[in-house]
Image 1 (spheres, rainbow, N blue to C red):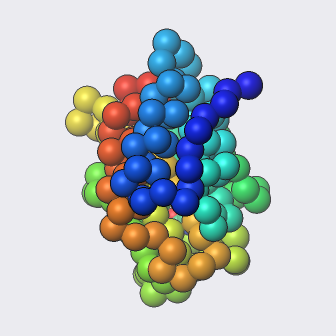
Image 2: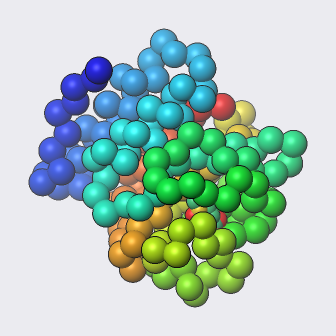
Length: 161
Ligand code: SME
């Protein structure tokens, strides 16, 4: 349906610039946030290497509810403040966890997950959702991954919530 030229062999800076352009193109002129979350999780799943889960949880009535994702079936509801996702949603701060076994209260939806990156989606100063990425590799997510995905989510936040 969409053809993007995203080169995974380029530097992380260039890779994330290209991923951001593709993400912006996908959500432009589409007001349905669920459709946009579906395409953004598919885009990330296709191009960001070494993931075993990529998707969104939405904040609904004060808890996180599973949204569009790629990967194995997952926990449906997560309380605010619980696990890596609930911590990101409550604090509004990115959580980059090198080893999920060391994160108190980590929720193991997929036993293969070893590291995790959770980026809050903030709209009108409120957390409306989180992007959750899991990897089977310990310490998979770099500071550049965090910066690239934080910028991507901030740029399209109005189309995600
Ligand atoms: N590990 C997450 C739960 C969601 S799954 O990884 C898809 C957490 O601790 O919040």
